[in-house]
View 1 (cartoon, rainbow, N blue to C red):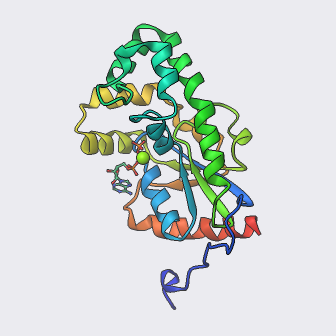
View 2: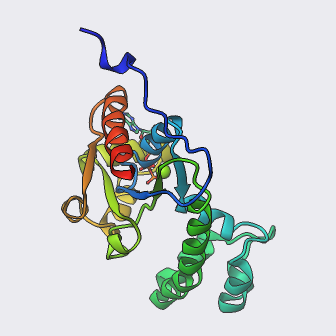
View 3: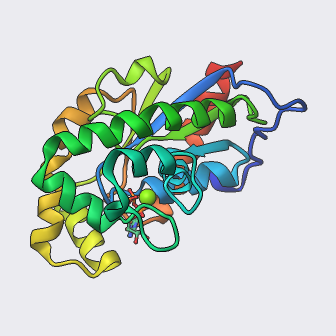
Length: 218
Ligand SMILES: Nc1ncnc2c1ncn2[C@@H]1O[C@H](COP(=O)(O)OP(=O)(O)OP(=O)(O)O)[C@@H](O)[C@H]1O
Ligand SMILES: [Mg+2]
């Protein structure tokens, strides 16, 4: 028997860039492995649009959201180099819950607009839109045709994030507490990648989904 991993991979490339026939929303809790999995799709030639990266660009020095943020919250949330001071913003949002809503009201439309712009230039038949809080935002299918959840035990998430970010357990638990539960996320999923095992297992799982998505996009 030949090793299925050695068979040639179906290419994901289009000749002409344009809106993909299918947009798959990739989501999962903190540290579940979203970036790890997304990178494997990208390695197959699939266009990735990462809303976290977009949010960072919008709130970086000279970012498109910064003038609205400055006029809404004042200079106390702006770092000396002009980027959003995340620590100061977090403190503000903690003392004033409405501040978080106002920040989201500024950012979300801009994130959507930039996501659409990047998706419109996709050069693969389907694209992966990475949205960490896709389930938390409600109505995920208003944004994407299909939801792919990266799933693992909360204990696995806790250990990985403690290790990666050198955070104490309580801080990771506090982040998990404000995210959707594993059950809520799985209830919204069309497809699930179980990422409790070693990273080597991901290649086969990603490959199976890649072929399914190519078929759906056809
Ligand atoms: N299957 C795995 N086995 C071991 N470590 C893993 C596995 N998958 C991911 N990791 C590691 O766990 C950490 C979290 O993974 P990753 O950054 O991909 O998650 P994420 O969902 O993108 O996290 P975030 O929510 O912070 O963006 C990283 O340090 C990554 O290298
Ligand atoms: Mg990530």
